[in-house]
Length: 296
Image (tube, rainbow, N blue to C red; front, side):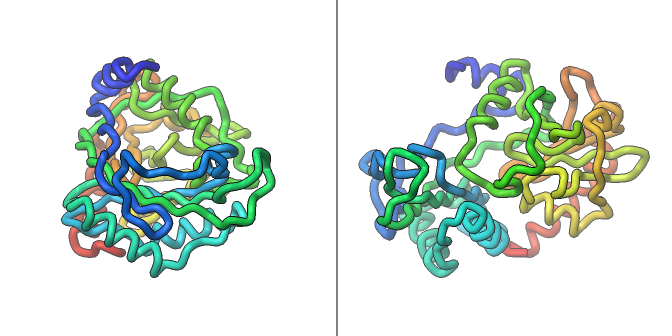
């Protein structure tokens, strides 16, 4: 899909086009480097076989939000791939350095850990991991968006279920499918037809005054915003058929950059309420938490 097509599709879905990558300063294995001069090995396993994990954090007023939880998940994802995770102290110092070097006030911070240089095959090398931190602008998020369901299932029994890996090709294909149809997010069912997640978001459904999100056993990523919304609302985890999304009174997406975003339409069919009372209450509770504690 061309850049123009992506921009047009995002606009049709009610979302702004994604920001262009930053050309500022990146942090690579202990060094701050101008982004246009940054280099990693062409044999890096993150490039050749998708052997890596990552985290995306929102930065507000120069402070990354919920860093503690993101670092816990980074370590958990790394363990699932058998990668040694960097210490929290190293990552926190790197975060502080890259935020300061870019004079970043509000934006998006990406932490990427790969298997490092290795053979042109699945076996890892002996040169250690690669750790990269980069920042970019933070797009404004409209109050609502449209989603599209896709035919390709999430495998809730995958060896990497729940891990935030750099193996993102499946998500790119699904998201392109959604963008081409005027939506900003694609929604997956799992292999048994239950509601699972979006390409980069979790989903909550409101039915009959009850707020429900798929359990982790259904295969979604353990989203940080999802986790916090569960803590500050009466939402529950329960298996739901994909059809529950079409029958819902209201629904919303959660992610580190969307926060709580109401769903306006599913596959072109408007939901009865947008935003509904459960969505409004969840967004208010999350905003109150985020404004009172930068690292809940």
